[in-house]
Image 1 (cartoon, each protein chain N blue to C red):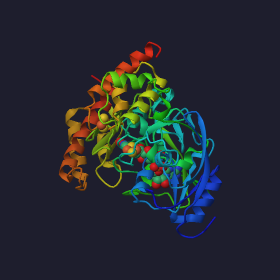
Image 2: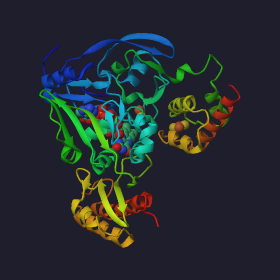
Image 3: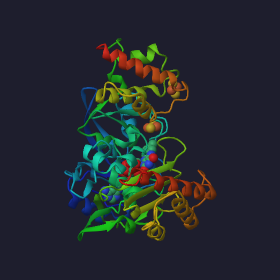
Image 4: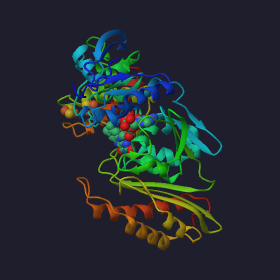
Length: 167
Length: 291
Ligand SMILES: Cc1cc2nc3c(=O)[nH]c(=O)nc-3n(C[C@H](O)[C@H](O)[C@H](O)COP(=O)(O)OP(=O)(O)OC[C@H]3O[C@@H](n4cnc5c(N)ncnc54)[C@H](O)[C@@H]3O)c2cc1C
Ligand code: FES
Ligand code: FES
C-alpha cells in the first residue's frame, strides 16, 4: 500500500448479488453504491437527488433493509445482497406495490418513486399490516416535489390490500 | 465522483484498526454507519486519505443487557436499539431518543456509538448519554480506557477520543427503579436534528425529589448538564413553580449562538420551556410522582 499523503485511484474488485444475479466489477474505493449501480451496472432506476441522505430517491434494500445508497460505498457492498427497483416487475407484470401506485396515482414525475417503493417493500416484508403512523414514519424519509404525498399514502394502503389478496 | 480520493480499509479486528489509525494519523477516519461521515465526504467537507470501515469487525454488533446497564457495541445500529425488547422495557428513554433520529432508513445504518463519537450538539443520543451518566470505552495502542460522557465532550464536534483510538462501546446505566424520564425537542420537520431539546430524569422519595439529571441540547457546542440547578432541586417538593424556577435558572446559564436555523434569543427561550416540560413529564412518569 502506498504511503503517499493523497492516494491515487485505489480500486478493488467486488462481487455483489443484485436482484438475485451475481455481479462482479472493479470499482474505485470512493465510488458510492448509487453511482456504481447507475454507471457501472447501468441500473438507473436508483435515482440520485441530494447525495447526503435527505431526499430518499436512492433508497434500496441492502440485505433486506431499506438504506440510502448515496451514503454507502460500493466497496462496502462486497459480498452483500442488494435489491433495486429493477428487480420488482416480472417482465410486463407489475409488482403489487407498483400496481398500487399506478392505480392510486402515487406518482407524477416519478423521480422519488423508486425509492419510496423500495422503502414500502422493506416495510411490508417486515410487517404486512403497518399502522398509519408507521406508514407516515417510513414515508417521512422521502421527499416528493409533485404529489403532495396524499396519493402516495393511498398507494401504500392499496399495496397492503393487494398484498392481502395474495398479489 | 463525489468524495476526494481515499483508500478504503475493512479491518477484521480492533487491533488491526488501531494499527491503521496509528499509520495514517490525522489522515484517517473511522467509518461506522456513514450517516454523518459520508455526507461530509460527498460534500468534500471531510477529505481523509484512509477510510477505515469497522463493519467487518466481529462481535461489536451486540447489545448486552446487564442488571444495572445496557451496553451497546460500536456496530449496533440505532434501529437495533430501538427494536430491542429489553431496552424498551428497562430503559425506554433510549428508545424515545433514537426514534427522534432521522428516519427508519437512516437508523438502519446509523450507529449508536457513531452518533456519540460524532457528538453533534443537536443530536439526541449524546444528550441522552449525558443525562444517563453513560460511559464510553475507547481502545488505543496502549489499551482500553473508560471515559464519562461529561468528560468526553470538549466542545463543538471535539471529543476526548485520540487520533489513534476507536470507541468500542457505550454503557448506559439504568436509573434507579421508579425514575421518571422525558425527552423534549423542537425540530423544523420530524426527523431533523433538533433546533433545541431537553432531557430530564426525576426520582421522588417521600414526596421530595431524591435525584434529578437535567440536560439541554442544541444550545451550545455540546450537550449541557446543570449540576447547581440539579442540586437545588434535590430535596425540594416537586411542582410547577419549582420547575419554572429551575428552567429560568438554566435559561440564565445558556449562551447559544445565532445560526441559519434559529437566533440565540429563540434558542434560549425555547430551551427554558423544554426544560420545564421535560421536568414535568419526567415527574408524571415517576413512581409516586403523579398526584
Ligand atoms: C437524513 C439524515 C437525518 C439525520 N437526522 C438525525 C437526527 O435527527 N438526530 C441525530 O442525532 N442524528 C441524525 N442523523 C445522523 C445519524 O444519527 C448518524 O447515524 C450518526 O450521527 C452517526 O453515526 P454513524 O454510525 O452513521 O457514524 P459515521 O457517519 O460512520 O461516523 C460519524 C463520525 O464518528 C466517527 N466514528 C464513528 N464510529 C466511531 C467509533 N466506533 N470510534 C471512533 N470514531 C467513530 C467517524 O470517524 C466520524 O467522524 C441524520 C443523518 C441523516 C443522513
Ligand atoms: S440521493 Fe440519497 S438520499 Fe438523496
Ligand atoms: S413524483 Fe415527482 S418527485 Fe415525487
